[in-house]
Length: 266
Ligand code: ADP
Image (cartoon, rainbow, N blue to C red):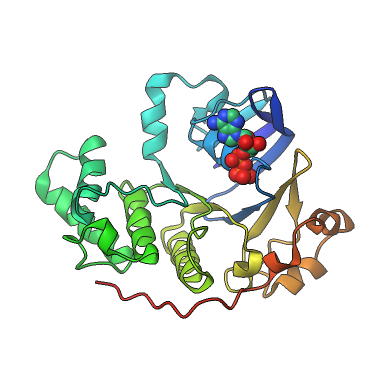
């Protein structure tokens, strides 16, 4: 699904990741961690060609799109197959939930109104937000808005979902519900999910593979075999992986008890 070999990513003269290798298969749930500025967003952006790779031996998405030589005419087709979720929601604030979703469907070639309506209901159902069609984004809570963003990302049934700190603006409990939703989509729809996060405590409830951007390298952290707890991950780590956990503040590994915010869906 994703194959990067010897890839280097930079912003201007600033090399962020050097000679990285990454292979991600169908249906994997992957946490991407690293300090602020390590290059997590930049790495995700290369996957939907929002940022060009500086150099590399191979960089392919779906075995079909060669990111090192992708024609600009192909970029919309690649993006249609990738669901992108940002931290800051980015819903259009001047229109309803339904109009936000319909806008994307029309922009991606859905001509039939009845089919668009049906698809909107389907994705709202997936994120447990049926009934919210007429609501304006600013009348929804942060968690609810993020559910709509996830629904929007699911419209074209993406095989790959890239979530750039989707819980960054949410309290822990609300964030946990969002991760739970992404996890469900990964397992039930067999989509691959790559999620950058500052909070590895999610790993306790939603096991996955962990990759760490540190010192301009991409390092695989711990085992990927459905660990039960973060302790299992650390216990299963090779010495190299343990080293890679250094520098990650320990509070990232524990759930913050900072919320009583309940979400009341529509
Ligand atoms: P992270 O997601 O890990 O916080 P980013 O990929 O956002 O890291 O940023 C990595 C580095 O690239 C940072 O030093 C940041 O300042 C720089 N950077 C981010 N966006 C741009 C940009 N549009 N132009 C130039 N440099 C940028």
